[in-house]
Image 1 (cartoon, one colour):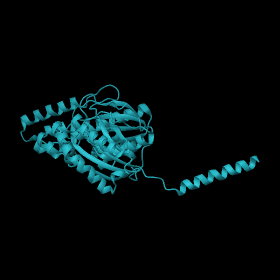
Image 2 (spheres, rainbow, N blue to C red):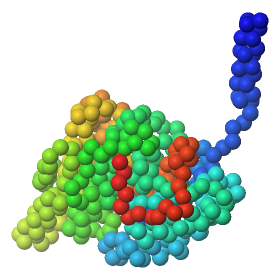
Image 3 (cartoon, rainbow, N blue to C red):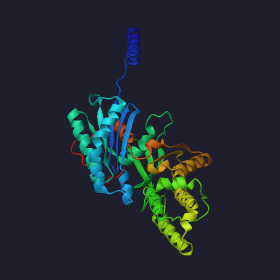
Image 4 (cartoon, rainbow, N blue to C red):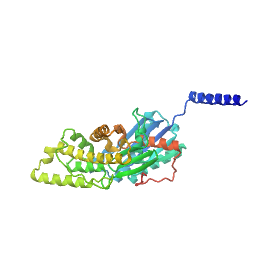
Length: 362
């Protein structure tokens, strides 16, 4: 009798598994909305793949040498509906097919965040689906898990997260567990690039222009100060001051100094910033013993940083991960994949969730 019972249990188990394999699993469809600064972006994620990722940038800020918060929020109001509609159309997804809407809750510019969060929660309420608040920096990290065919980091891993507003070295234990090992004590790396570019007379945003000019320059031509701070933290304000003092002195003796040495200046500045980041990343890997190392954030698109990461990977035996360029800067795709992790874990938001300009990642 007992043998017959066991045989029946085994048969039922195999039958259940066979039915699962034959029954198509329902796809998870998530709309991700990003509006933390000056990019209005919407993306449609189907399971782990991005089917559309539409971004409207606000180029007019270049006329002011930086982002004007009030103008940014007004531009988000103008752009958010057409951007969302374009993303849904490109993905061939109807609003009724959405399982959730993920949106950036913070950190960022409060006015910009309010536009995206209000739109997302209103649409979610109308459709009867969850509105999931997402941490902007966590989303940058989780962009590595979008299905692009590339390998993904294994937990735990270290992530150097660098942008115009943030510079962090994170220990990532899971999609929901982050520990700050080091961070900038003043300017972010992206801000340092932009401020240095301004000193060179380059338009905003200057970071990508420095990267482009540096391709034809000598990174060892000029030496700049690399401020040292305790532990794994970083500081860039002293570097900015040193660059300014050097340029001011050079222009006094040669008014055409910048024009004559622009490429070498760009290469030397870029090399200094990148070496500062990687020196602290080396420190973090030795401190933790972790060899899984990833880049994230807008500055992770920098060609020298990506190249030097690969050089260090070979030297130190790291497994390294760099996101595709389209997922480095602020985008809806990273919000959507973060939303999928949250949806699967039951980490859902509420309509009472308010946008926050500052939000700790830990």
